Length: 166
Image 1 (cartoon, rainbow, N blue to C red):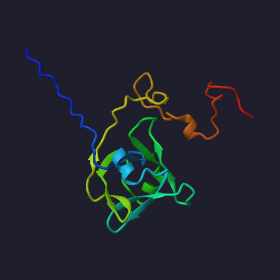
Image 2: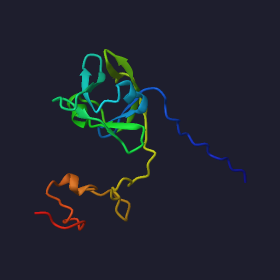
Image 3: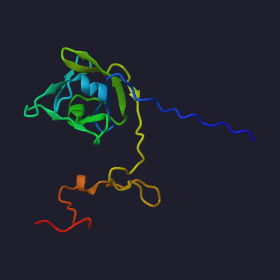
Image 4: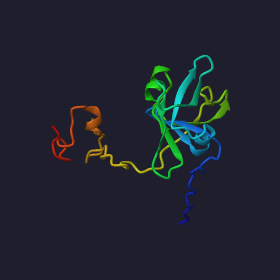
């Protein structure tokens, strides 16, 4: 028998500014994109309906329309901005994570949604970062993988995770 060794298809991290709109609407900025914006603590999200352009510009954290920027994990070179409401409001297609190269225009980092973007997948194993498995023993997906997110009345004690808080 002759076997071929499969060569991984993983792409190296880009040194160009890139923005990923994740499948649920969060915006992920790589280190070059974040640095291009001046490493702000918050940003504003803008949209040009006529041109299908998303703009991201630095903002004061206290600004009414500011979204905080947070580092994915300590030491990470990726930064997250909540963007689900923004994406839903403007009808930006979600469900698949896509990455676009950003360009500075009028003091904003701009991505062009008329371009298809590059489909990206996570390099993390499922269930990381304290999430419970989303599959039952028979392999079916759980209807409520995150009960605390789906039910605001859920408490850690209800899940057997701690003492009840009055």
